[in-house]
Image (cartoon, rainbow, N blue to C red; front, side):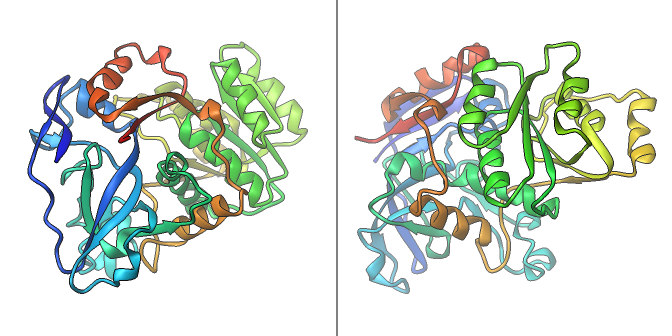
Length: 347
């Protein structure tokens, strides 16, 4: 089969590799669409890949074309997204249903070859089927949606509260949608790009503030008229990570969904806000719960099928053919020039 193979730093070659082996409990997925995740960028631009050569890609959808001996053959022909985590299902954390914290996991596109290829073989339990009314490009957004929903679950989100969301990238737009669907009182978004703020308002945010404005903190708090009860940081940016402390209200919940790849320092008075405001601070890692792969995936599939979740055209910057994966990744040499998801497709 053909695959976009990362042979080294900033070096992707579209070439032939061996077809994946379909084990007894696996299915073979013909990849239709695959998104480039923010976590893929340091694997390409830097030296963050676990090994070389590797095929990246974990945000994807496709068609099931083959099943293993122990798998129901009725899956053949189904459209599906794929939960990329392959936990061991045996360790202490897996036994608790905390699959994201598995101590011996594999991950499609990171620790095993991924979806920037013609085919991927995965365990059948990782398949999340969706109807023909949902297109493959939308199916490639299932994983980012589950990341957002998992963050809300980690923060013990409840409706009727004011929500601040820092960052309006792919994870941010789904955090907005889920907060709206689950009954948020007011949703306020923060970004440095006014067009992203306007996009967020199209999908459910009540207001947006540009963090380059000197008085955005004061204006946002005045807008909600009280305080923010939930703050979700989705960008993994050193500045927005710190802004979360200032936006947090007393006895509120702050959840870091975004992950940073750089060192971060807090002035002590800023860090002391945890004490002074008595807010709860939690992290969110991946998107899984029991029974595997979890409500995050089941709800995402259902809500897309019912058109309660949407993928607008503005979510996508450019669609590339899989053979042009290297060209797509090079766009991130100037990340400010990328205004949405880059999708790779097999036609």
